[in-house]
Length: 99
Image (cartoon, rainbow, N blue to C red; front, top):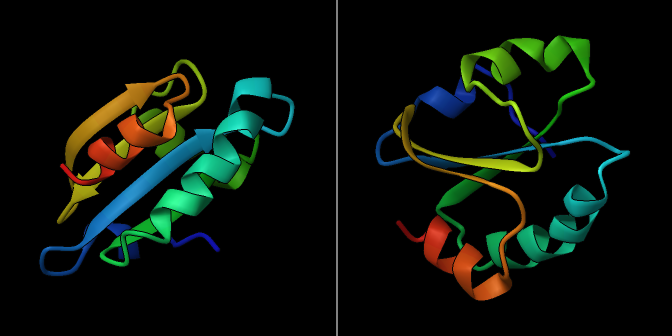
C-alpha cells in the first residue's frame, strides 16, 4: 500500500522509504521481497512504492531526481536522510532503513 505525497512529508519523527521501481525492471523485482520482509521489521517506517512509469507519480520521480532504478530514498520528517541506487542485500537494507 502506498502513501500519498502529502502524508509522507508530515509527522513527528516519521520515517518514509520511497522505493522507485518499474514492472519491467529485473533488479526492482529482486529487491521487492527483500524490502517487504525488512520493512515489516521497522514499524516506524512507512513504505511508498513509486512506479516510475505511472504519470500520476511523475512529480515524485522528478522531485527526487531519480535517474536509475531501483532507487531507495529514506525520508525523516520530509527531509532526505539517505538515498541508494541499485539493489541491496538484506543486511545492508536493514542498516539503510535504520539510519
